Image (cartoon, rainbow, N blue to C red):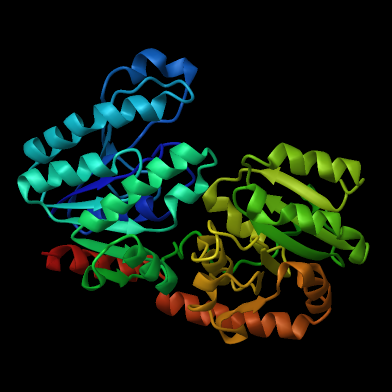
Amino acid sequence: MRILIIHEIDWEKKVVFEPHHLAELFSIQGHEIFVIDCAQPNSKDLVKGMHTRILSNYSRVYENANITLIRPASFLVKGLNRITHFFSCKKIIEKTIQEKGIERIFLYGSITNGIQTIKAAQKKNIPVIYRLLDISHSLINIPIVKHIAKRLESKVIRNSNLVLTTTKDLENYAVEMNAKKEKVKMFPLGINTDDFKPLKKSSELQKKIGIKEKDKVIIFVGTMYTFAGIENIINEFSFFEKNVKFIIIGGGPDFNKIKLQVKSKKLESNVILLGFIPQKKIAKYIALSDICLNPFEINEVTNRILPTKILEYLACKKPVLSTPLNGTKEILLNEKYGIVYAIQKEFVFKLSEILDNKLKLEKIGNDGFEYVTKNHDWKILNKTMIDELKNIK
């Protein structure tokens, strides 16, 4: 099949996640894959950004993958790149459909290029699968923009031939957004078991980042949004024993705020801020931990989702402590799935308590690994996803 994947992220700079895996795994299966993305602001590439760019034989994750990345022209200045992409992308989408003989469209974007995709696909009677990973409009803070984004998101969901959600709660959300119930179904999130797998602790790496053999290690991997819950853990860090070390991997809007918080509380020797780490190296750091964290605040952004980081932790055979997000609880029911839940007010207390029980942590980690490798491996799921694309009407 000739498949067009459309997203509103910067394909080259965004942290590798589901669309990157599926695009490249589809290509390995022998399908022709074309991707249209939205380049992020970059003052150094202003001139380059004014023209549509096509990168052939492209891959980021798998060596034998081969996709074509198409980057529509836009003005790469913050606040203007998405607006100009909004108006320029439809022509490129239509041209790609026509010239490449696209048979199926797999859509991730809703606000920046979703409506344009739906209209172009309807013209040529091409089926569109919309992949619902989260509630897009909820990430926007400006009320009027948020309202417009919600209307665009609803229109995309309503007009897609099939909506594939990652949780049951997001199925309900799709129906709330006017999708027909029979056109909505859940399809599990996947993980790359080549990159996320159990590894032995590296004494060299421990020494490099200041971890001793008797230290108890907790870890968070991901983007530091305000709702990530990291600030709360640092605020209550005095509750832990002195040998608890907290590794934080990732960056994001709140990174500098967290950095200042760590400094003000004089926790530099306990809280290890590593910034972004290449995905292929993250498992080495997870291997150093006793337990992995997902301390998200529960709100409209987080409550209906299953964060991929949780599945990646489990694939490394590590137990997880998470706040009880509805979307997560309905899939990962209890400790037999590798996870322990604690509400935000009790999170640090529960974490401190469970850190003292090594045998329990090991058992939870083993159970989670067994579950996740059977149910969330992209090498298996990508073939099932192709069946979904073939059978869509």
